[in-house]
Amino acid sequence: MKTLKIGLTGGMGCGKSAAGAIFRELGLEVLDADALARRALSENPKVRAGLSEIFGGRAFLPDGSPNRPEIARMAFSDREKLAALEAAVHPAVREAWTQRAREIQNASGGGFSALAVEIPLLFEKGLEKRFDICITVFCSEATRLGRLRKRGMSPEEIGARDAFQLPPLEKVRLASVALFNEGDLDFLRRQAALTLLNLKNRWTKTP
Image (cartoon, rainbow, N blue to C red; front, side, top):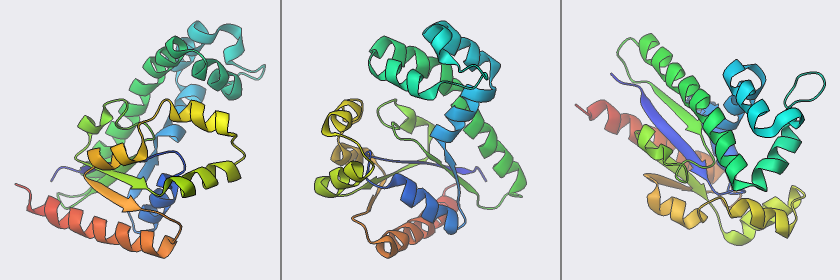
């Protein structure tokens, strides 16, 4: 049986990482696309060469590690640089989760298996086509903005990042499943558990 591939997303501040942590508690393997990207920036020779070409000498610190704050500053202030960065990093990230899905499938012995990948810009980058099911996490706008302010983000910073994302309710419209996360983690956990149960039942019945 093919491994069920789940794309997990949500607007910035909506709680997709909280949902990912709960899914892990429930036994689902969840990969963080941002963590995979950080690993590619640090370890993948092809990606590192691309960074040097895009950002020049400011791409890396003296110890050879990626200069992430400077990379983010330059990328988010220049759409061409951002597109070039994504073109350099995204193929390596996709290969990492695709390879992990193959490994899980090979180890499953033909039984049910699943892998989720947490991707902030799942729909914005057209990556939903690479998954069997897409789950989005959402909350009220007041709650979302309050969470972001608690992280120390200014209204200008929030607006700049939001400009690169679809509105949370548009992600709800595009998703297969939507989880509501207004702050009650027990409620979010119940939604996640029911979602996993329903997905397993549906997937094992799929020819």
